[in-house]
Image (cartoon, rainbow, N blue to C red; front, side, top):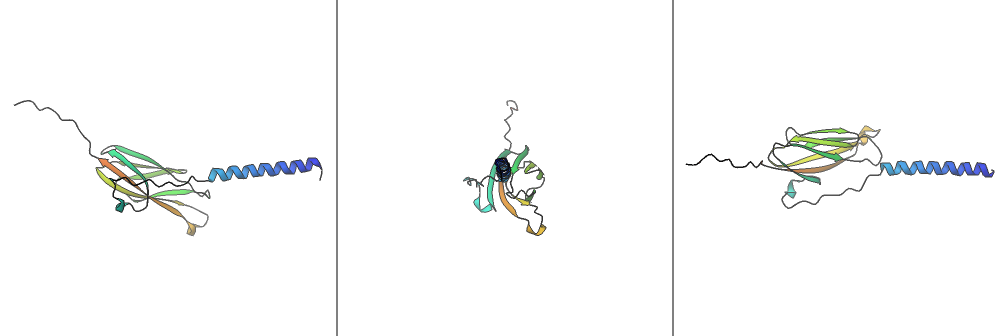
Length: 147
């Protein structure tokens, strides 16, 4: 094997190694962090790991983004497992948006994300709970006159 052939072989190897490294890094998922449970949330009502706590005022149109990653690069899907009426989840690629006209109260919403590998009997999933704390809308007092 002459110098030119050896050089081309090493160059091809380096290009393939770089492509493999780029693909591996693109699919790597960031480490999962678990949100600490705030003192005003009932820990006994959280079914899965706490994803986040969202605070809002009743009647607001609430939207939050969820993101997930599959280390194998399988397509993923999101599902609301336990949610109040009117809450919907829409998705595209690896992101989902939860929309809801917020109602007063504390709501514990369970969500799942699962993958679609080539074998439908081999679907894997992860679960989380989102806590929505919706407070009443505070309106200013109004003078009614004097008596």
